[in-house]
Image (cartoon, rainbow, N blue to C red; front, side):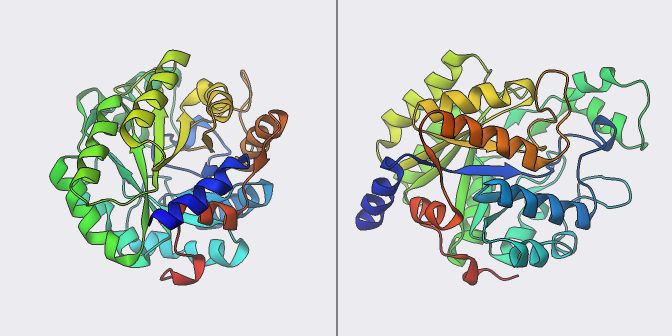
Amino acid sequence: MKETSRKSGATAAKGKVIITCAVTGAIHTPTMSPYLPITPDQIASEAIAAAEAGAAILHLHARDPETGKPDQTPEAFARFLPRVKQGTNAAINITTGGSPYMKVEERVRPAAQFKPEVASLNMGSINFGLYHLADKYETFKFDWEKPHLEATRDLVFRNSFKDIEYILATCYDNGTRFEFECYDIAHLYNLAHFADRGLVKPPFFVQSVFGLLGGIGTHPEDVAHMKRTADRLFGDRFRWSVLGAGASQLRIAAQSAALGGNIRVGLEDSLWAGKGKLAKSNAEQVVLARKIIEGLGMEVATPDEAREILSLKGGDKVAF
């Protein structure tokens, strides 16, 4: 593992920045944007276009094509995973977060069955507030949307130590590596706990999440604090990435790139491509992220370079 870490670190030192694109997620509802991909066709085409624009990793959720409601069944993912794999060389990341309303046994099923190169793994429980978004819309396209949002006033997104152990035990023997989603400083300490127990192996792909109600904020000091803490806990054993929710997406992306980190964009995290301007595609946000990276004199990592940086198993070793 030390040899792999040295090799991946050398690649990272050349200024290559990984762009992850989170294509649809489970936070935003269809009313919020006509551009939010819902159907398998839309998810597949959006993912492929994002990869063509420069995303090296595609973070994927599934939805009911009739209503847009989050759907964590393997059958839902099977409708687009092979098409995405055939259409791009990008590494595919399957969520184990699903929706905060789901139990961990439901959330882990797609990653367990399809054995992706990467799976997301939330590193702690948080209040997960989306209820404030409901007040922004007078009407909704589907009956489920408003109750879904308002119920988060009393929602804890459960990711207990037992839940995390369950996902690790279910997926690690498949060669799947993890995007460790850390919504607060404590989640970094949780990751360090699992590293101390030998249950996770470096290099850790740490995805710091900023701006969700219930997690850490979006102030530049919040971003710097997350990076300083990860540096202290993990040294050269991790690769850092960020996602900023909503309007903070590109500002936080720029700060991460300037600090030597990586970037996640996509309509899961933000519906915008500038103040008051809805993003018309995931690829549009990837292009904006790419401009930030190249404007700083850095280069966007290709999928194979991302695989080297993160020590991924390769797209030929997945089960779809």
